[in-house]
Length: 153
Image (cartoon, rainbow, N blue to C red; front, side, top):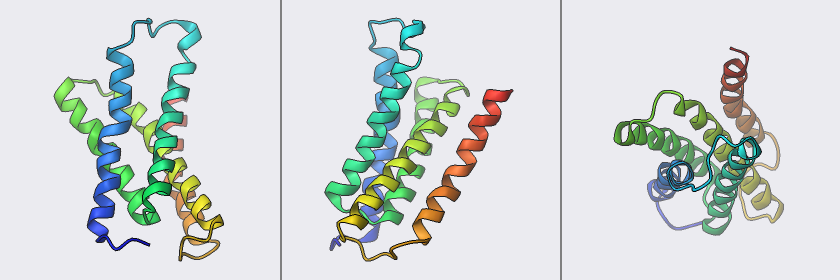
């Protein structure tokens, strides 16, 4: 583990969640020379954005050896704060908050992958099975249900 205080570890994940998911999305939307309404890009760009955010979270967890609680909690709270901040600064509509749910799912998936990777390499002192896997599922359930309801309506 690290000798850094828990607040610093949480802050690192919070700053990542605050800047990276919404920053990448902002760059894709505002600096793209390709029209985003193209049918060929309607699946590719969101999937690439989701993959970039997830891989960034995995890299953050593996390279800095963040504890799972700081990694997951800081990433989710930072993502929510980042989308809220961009709503105020840029004037995004409420529709952008549906994309925030996908960013939260990317943070959860990346944290889960980093946890499993760290656990397999025996670098964590957390229980081998049970607690975190159940928490990942419980935390991912509300965004999945909300996205499913938004698709239906």
